Amino acid sequence: MTRTHRRRAVAAVELAVVMPLLAFLFIVTIDFCRVFYFTQVVTTGARNGALYLSDPSGPNQSRYASLQEAVRGDADPSFASQLTVTSTSGTDAIGPYTQVTVSYPFNNITRYPGIPTTFTVTRTALMRPAPAAPSP
Image (cartoon, rainbow, N blue to C red; front, side):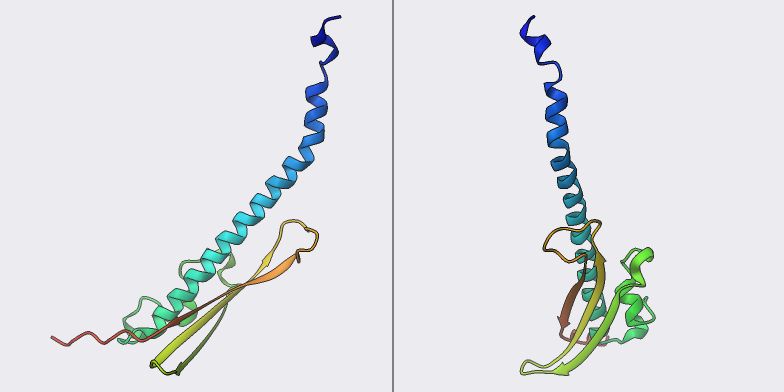
């Protein structure tokens, strides 16, 4: 027998050994991408909400009717309703500010050892009021 005939099934055995690791890495990559996407959506929503509240011309000039609409404006409608929005305003040593916090409950696709299945993605944006535009 030649050497090629004796090693015919080696590739199939190697694939069977490596396939679970490849599948695990694929699922981990998908979860990481999902966390990254939702983090970007929550960050953008917090920034949009802070911009909405810090506008000196008031909400009447905005295309959004409320803070919730401003935060959820860039989010996918399928999960925008799950975004939790809170806002505070106050004054510190620098001056007045508006702070918007946006949260989203994230669920992993699978369970990983030592990592919770559900956790909350939270981002906060603090914004100072923009100066009023000079009148013509």
